[in-house]
Length: 85
Image (cartoon, rainbow, N blue to C red):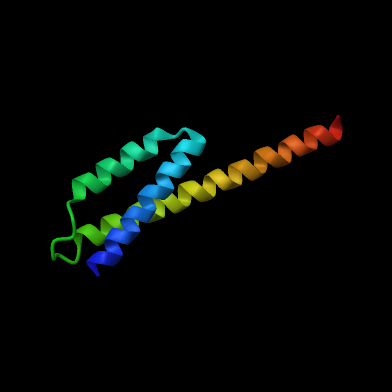
């Protein structure tokens, strides 16, 4: 169970770093570091660590989806501009 949590955290951190590098959004990294750092590791209590991990995952997923949607809108806008030209 602990291994799964660690894997999820690592994947989330990697995803956030990739998104941050691509989009230059370092605020997200700061927020995640604060949240994850503040939680402490999952030391037996079923509440603490996992809830934080779930929250972080949800936040990251929402942000990534928002960025993808924004990208699609921007790209579509550019294509329309090119079509108009």
